[in-house]
Image (cartoon, rainbow, N blue to C red; front, side, top):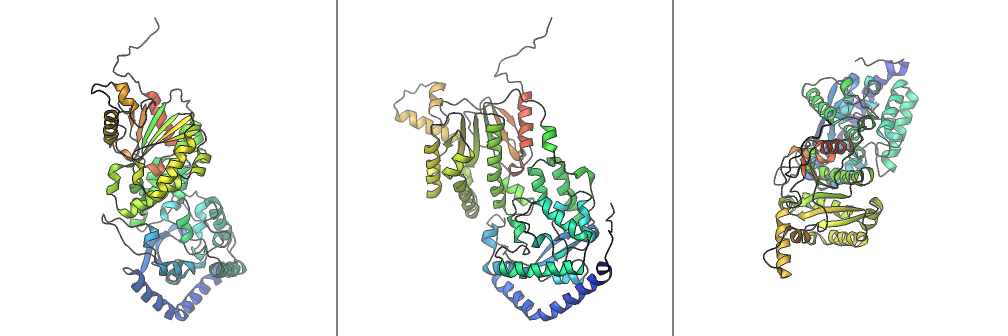
Length: 498
């Protein structure tokens, strides 16, 4: 692929680069005392490495190392995993981001010819991999310290398509007065907005990075996503060049095109063992808590798809096992925060009309606010009959059976009981047994999930991690269920016409 040069203005060809060099040198001299102070403060307040270094795509797709002041510590839990961003970021780091002072080291990138003061902001290599041939023309010019997209609403409030379009608009005609206007607007943004669009924090607040955004909305397949991640790692390792890859081209109608086969046989009771949140995040260089955050968001998507698109009446979710208490406290605190938010009664009722919540497990062990929210939702939905959501939190299949036995003993039942009696003392009393269980992330075990109810269920183990489990993945799972021949121990003879 060629990065095509459009009609360059006199300013772009002969003036822009000399101005970049002059002002970069000028600012490095003038701001040198401030630079030293920031280095010393970083050593004192953040400790560890002073600079954050990351590989980004530059002019003509050639990757380079971008430099910033580090704003977060490198604290880890006892298992060596980075703690959540909110725990690691320091007050000094927040100050740096607020006034975009963390970007100062990029003056070195400008001097080296890798960046300009104004241009398209360099995003991650793994995101650019999925850009179309036209979109990649953004990087026919040097990336910038700030850009048109950053002063036109910022990346946190605009769609990916809008941001890329702004970058394309800028590179088509670069003029002196446009650059001056962008610089003036950038100064205004930094000084007078609390949400600085040029600090780099906006991207961390975005719900998805571009690659994840495409996967989430079924514009690319899981296979394409994995290919893209592998290619990005290879380019970074080899200090290579980002080029257009037709095999990774997003298809806006991907989901519509593939979900065409009619689903004639659907489970009446489907269970999900939601696995892979932490691994999904770590594969992207993020803390495990980011995976849990996205996992909770995806839970909402999958549940709605089961109930309202496919009409499956009962959905069981294995969200938190009794063994999960062994995880780091910081990770537990984040999980509890997201569960508490998820179970806000007004939000739950609006999101899931006609759904009754049934909690499996001893949820009273959780923080008081979570318990209060859970009980409020249970009460508010107790008369709903169309759909049932069984949410397993602090749940164990073995503990459920022990609980059932103890309840039967407390009720004075004789030692000889039948299956129907035991069923009445389970969390899912009066519900049909599981028809289909999906465990994401490729692990092929039940991990103590609904051991009684799973007795004759069909099992399915897709390799995709739960945060990336899309509507298309659910459809594929249901197609697989439709192909299964459920015999329940009997022999079913083929019926042929004579």
